Length: 163
Image (cartoon, rainbow, N blue to C red; front, top):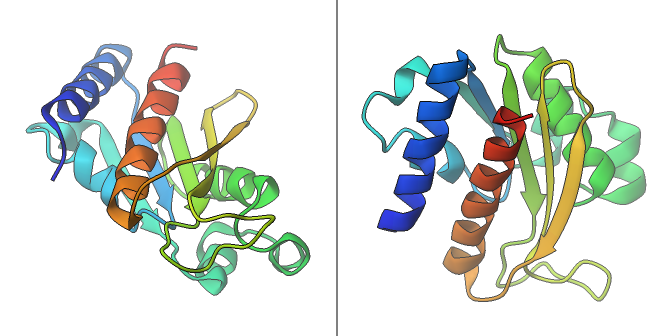
């Protein structure tokens, strides 16, 4: 499922985290656990990966991660404020040092003119730092969008680990 290049990137992230004694938590919506799945595909990842939250529906984002219902009502789940709050909530509900969150529209349906299929919002941070937000519009089918999201999430974790 994961390319050898992506697995090498995951292994490099895990090694950096081991050296810096950092733990990782994920908060995933559109990827449904694939980020955690990719990271835990690497043998020995249990010393770095603490936990992952799969908050696929809106209510779970509110209940588990503390995303304010007002944000979801006002902007929908696929937006910058929700991605930021997902990351902050996952970090607050763990004993990790690094977090990445993803919320997006993997398709094939569910998109709109304002929020097209392939749009993914990311939140990431290292404990003690400001939350970073970025968004991407990926192309391809559902699986390709999800895998591109995993790769970008790992890139963001690498950046956070090196800040």
